[in-house]
Picture 1 (spheres, rainbow, N blue to C red):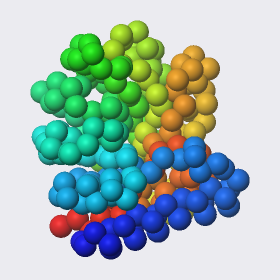
Picture 2 (cartoon, helix red, strand yellow; picture 1 turned 180 degrees about the horizontal axis):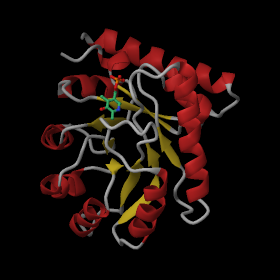
Picture 3 (cartoon, rainbow, N blue to C red; picture 1 turned 60 degrees about the horizontal axis):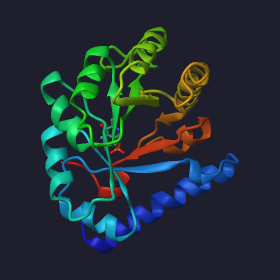
Length: 229
Ligand SMILES: *Cc1c(COP(=O)(O)O)cnc(C)c1O
């Protein structure tokens, strides 16, 4: 996609966020747009950066790390939103700022052990399978409570909230209800874990609904960068 096209898609997604916030009386400073740049070239990321955008999300460890390292700037915020295997935790701990897909203690512990001491704690979100979709990873609400306790004692990571990916086929009404359920769980957890404020939910097809339900981070790929091949 050409640079002007990318800039205009970014502007239009930002505009939709502003409208969704105003419709639901939310402050749009409380909703961060993460540009999901997986499979897209670094040149596209640079174009968005030059247009003022700072937060990027990647799904694949190797690809994501290469982009962080090659980016000609060091003040962007990098989110890892893909499934995370044990053998990739070191790469992620060294290069990313946030990880959205924590679904077991072992991964959180490795990230804490492998976080370079000169860096601030790595920000973690627990991935909750709120749709109970057998095809999706993520923990149940009950498991999230246990996992949050386990994360809270790790020194070099910080539990910042919850993330979900909904089942693809749901109606709008069901999507909204499930986003609201995640919000409820977050509000229960924040009593024990005061930093657990973030809700990463909503993608190109449903981020307005997610904002309505309280999303603080929306992860948008195709509506910014165009379809992935
Ligand atoms: C790819 C991806 C997105 C972005 O999806 P779009 O529909 O392209 O906006 C968001 N979240 C996760 C976890 C993804 O893997």
